[in-house]
Image (tube, rainbow, N blue to C red; front, side):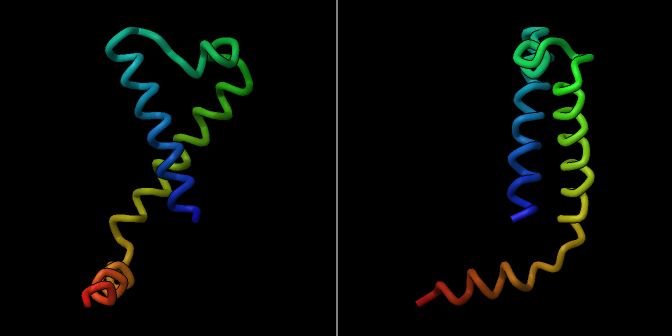
Length: 74
């Protein structure tokens, strides 16, 4: 479950950075009152923590994924 939350936050962060890169528009800052607003800073921090968390996915054992996919073969 924590992996999915981290992934969701990274998707939000990726979309926001895409908007910044393409349109120079920071959606998080726009919604929450500027990039220095406390809520914006909390969201930026959560996205950063999610990115750090997702680094661990590179080192996660894939056996569980392989067992799940092989059990679906009829």
